[in-house]
Image (cartoon, rainbow, N blue to C red; front, side):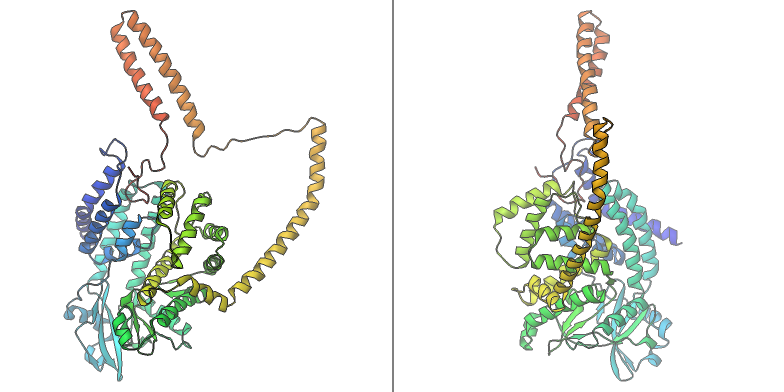
Amino acid sequence: MASLRAYRRFVVVTWQFLPLVWSYARDRRRFLLFGGPRAVSSERRVRRAERLVDSLLTLGPTFIKLGQLLSTRPDVLPPEYVEELAQLQDRVPPADWREAREVLEAEVGPVEEAYDDFDTEAISGASLGQVYTATLKGEDVAVKVRRPGIEPLVTADLRVVSWSLPILLFFVDDARAFSLENLAEEFDTTLREEMDYSREAAMLEEIRSNFADDDAVAIPAVHDSHSGERVLTMEYLEGTKISDVDALDAAGVDRHAVAENLERTYLQMIVEDGVFHADPHPGNLAVQDDGTIVFYDFGMSGRVDESVQGHIVDFYVAVANQDIEAILDTLVEMGTLSPEADRATMAEVMELAIADARGESVEQYRVQQIVSKVEDTIYEFPLRLPSNLALVLRVATVVEGVCLTLDPDFDFVTVATDYLGERGYYERGAREFVTDTGEQLSVSARSSLRLAPKLERALDRVDRDDFYVRAAVEDSGGYLDALAARLVTGLLFGAGVVSTGLLYADAAHRIAAVAAAATAVVGLLCWRSFRRRRGTRGRDALTPGDERP
């Protein structure tokens, strides 16, 4: 029965995405089986991204979550798609109360006995669950209930995603194929974790304990006795939606202070605590009249290991010092930037990014020049996004957007660097630099002592004419193979032309025609081998930097 449902969903999903897949196929080969790639304008990619969002919304909860995850992966999708998917809101009408009641009572028992009072009108609905208000032991609580019947639908959709992946991989290059395979695994894990409310409760409690002494942050307490895998009962905290600036002004809230507090809170979560709330859109953040920030919905939450934390600190320190080389070195160490990337171009990009983050004016013509350079090199040396950084990137992007909504002049970089300075990361970095430098000097000294005898032995072999050098030619780009192909086809083409002429002169017209046809084929192969390679050749519409006319 489950397999039959998955097959039906596969047909529905295929029907929804068929027009987009057809377009992507024609972008790669104009006539599907042959022909060069088509030029795709930014406007066309925006229209396709809008159609993709509509399809995801039509297909329901699983694919809404897939779209949200894709919005965190600029290494997989072009910026137009990422921008459209980032606006995908997980807001759907709540399920019927009678169905939700069955789920609730299966976890906590009869509603009338479990709670003093229960409002059966949901205050919010999402793809995987819905939230109600109730009273428990005289305290106002929020009760999150998993959407009824969601488990078999998610199971079927995850099968559809796994079946569809090989088809999708046909339209992307090897680098993107690797990213998509990792993304599919990450999506399966993330979705199942978000459906498990017992995991959410544990993450919520851990983050809450990290801010137990911070009066500027409010995180609801969990009622374990009334919570389980499908139900989460927690303290109900009220507040004004963080993006409602008019209401905040009416309440006399200092919006700049709230923005600074929000960024500092997330810096502590990511850089110090290693566990963070990963869905900071305005619907999950509220502000109380005293400026306290309230956090809701910890279904999306993540962890950062110590090595990534150290790289993030190094990155912000390098940004604060405007040390472009250090920024690039850190990106390489994080696995985000290929070691073979064009550092000159990436350095210019980093300079623009820092200027933009600080709100400095950037000359438009210079932006266009550098964007053009990036588009020319991004295919050969793509920016990569390790899975453990995807959520961090999304959080940083969304938090910055919320901060700018609160204060259009907010300086994200300055607040971050001030925070790191106050926590002593600059001094720590200096001490580590001194330690590392001392170790390097010690290694260099030992190496220099071993160098003299080795050099003497080499010179002795030179004197005895017993010194040989072996050299290997590195040809990762296949240039020698291409040169050999050109030589062979060129020689065959020349021989074919001569042979055809001789046969024709000898009145062997039929044989001459066959020779001419074969020579034409060889000539075509020779001509194709001399065509200049383009970075965008064979690129599909799912990858950044589509070919420009």
